[in-house]
Length: 334
Image 1 (cartoon, rainbow, N blue to C red):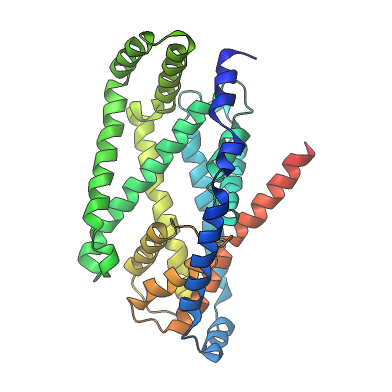
Image 2 (cartoon, helix red, strand yellow):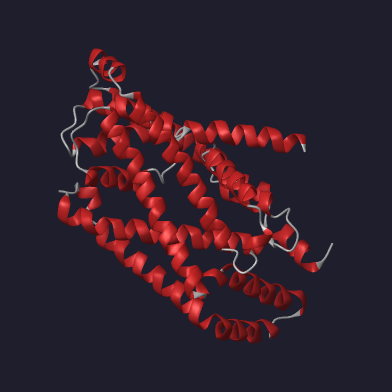
């Protein structure tokens, strides 16, 4: 076992990932139950079943295809984040890693998905786990930046509820993260040299570990340092956002809801922002309440909104759970 492998093993631990999960699950369960009650308390069940019965399933099928396209786009982007070593990683393995991660994040309110991705892809030779983690951090930063950018048209097109009016903070954070990425991309080598000089002042293996950490992190950011690749990554990131909003809009059509396309983007942002707190396993409750809350801005009747939340859940989350379970079962046999 070489030094980098040893460091990687010390840096990631399933036991550490599980630490503190119990209280989070308990709090999430309470929040999920309360949210589910809030979402369903005004539902007219006859109206709900009528809305579900009248769905245009052709649009539901299209929405499912868009979900698969979104996962594929996420895999392509993640592969590019390993530039210039991206060709060493099979796209199907990255796709499987993303599906597994999303399945775990849906089922287990402990954010184990990212840890699973690191371990799943970390089996590949010449790809250190610290570098994998740095690409995931860049990926999350890109998503946060696009969400912050998406808030801009909403400020002019939608009368935002009070809890979303503080979007200026999200925009500011997104701008700071973009600047940080640019600084690391343009001045990464200089920052690494300074970091290594500081690490040399530390005794023994501590200095070596910090220096290796700096090198691995910079490797993980290498993709944003090259203009052509960086342009592709940003382009795919905005495509992912567009595809996710398209899923919502296709289901508007399935329910015959006469809502503008901006409403699909608004609902996406509501879910992106609101799904962060812990909830019941499977995101049940919080997910449904957020959908009902988001559609209420467009005066969608609560029974119809709740039925829409059920179908959106089935389209957006269940395929990831099913695919992830299949991938996990097949991986266990290898």
